[in-house]
Amino acid sequence: MSSIAAETFQGPSPTYTLFDANAVGTATFFGTPVMGACLMAVNYRRLGQMGRAAATLILGIAITGLVILLGWNLPQPADLPIALVLVFATRWSAQTLQGAAVKDHVQRGGRVGSRWTAFWAGTAFLVVLFAVILVAVYIANQRTGVVIG
Image 1 (tube, rainbow, N blue to C red):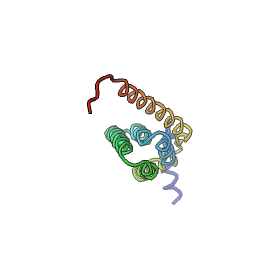
Image 2 (cartoon, one colour):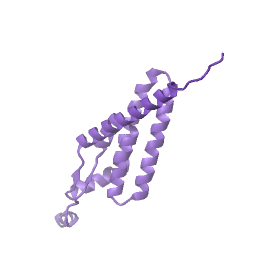
Image 3 (cartoon, rainbow, N blue to C red):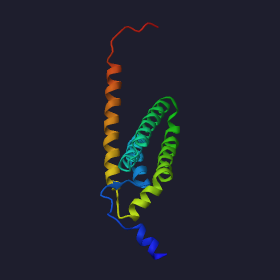
Image 4 (cartoon, rainbow, N blue to C red):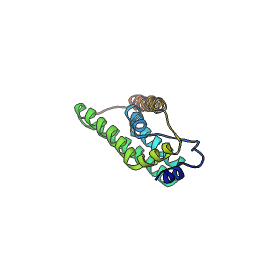
């Protein structure tokens, strides 16, 4: 049994880092599902799965856009439950889809990406998103014209 374990861990350690489900959840909490999807896409890219990386990123952008539309049109008390569901769903997706790969990576001597990196990436994205929304609202309110009725 020990010879099988020894064979499993032989070879060089991976030089890249992978983000675990907790880092993905942190990025999602601070920076919308787009940032959680970005970290998952980074993992897929580093694992050589470019198609899954692109699909994950596109899905994250689509979900975030849909949530922004819903948030604009739903009553405010619905915002918090929707946000919490998104955080937990994104974290669960990362654990389900990439948990085994991250665990294998760590067992081979690879490092896990920092949650601080996830936090700062999520925060930076949120700042940019708010700036874009503020500019869009400002431009929409600056239109001049006559309103009849």
